[in-house]
Picture 1: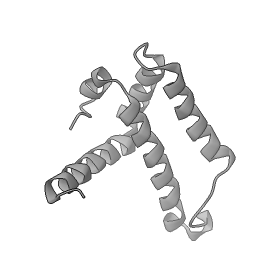
Picture 2 (picture 1 turned 180 degrees about the vertical axis):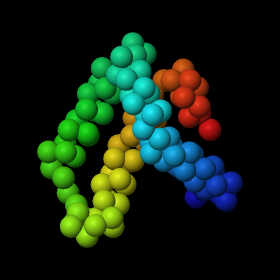
Picture 3 (picture 1 turned 135 degrees about the vertical axis):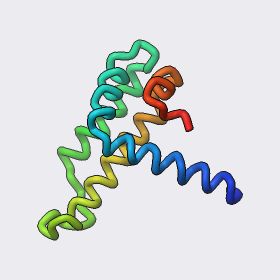
Picture 4 (picture 1 turned 120 degrees about the vertical axis):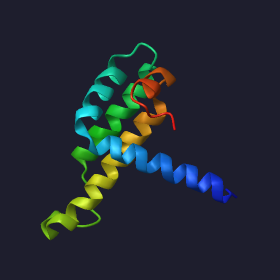
Length: 102
């Protein structure tokens, strides 16, 4: 079972990554570098594409979008999760370049 320090580290990493994801100006260049990087295995790139395309083809809404702003929260959550997985798969050099290590 994770201790309080591990829980805090996870929380800090999550918020740092969420801030990164919501800052589109940094996310787009990171994604470009991720997909063009020779350090990233083709299988990891394929998994990322399948997750993103799969979400847009089969959008499963926990909260319907017609509930205004609240309905968009689940979309942001899913996209944040997908981009967080991409960040986890990224090589250390990209994480360092975009300050995503800690």
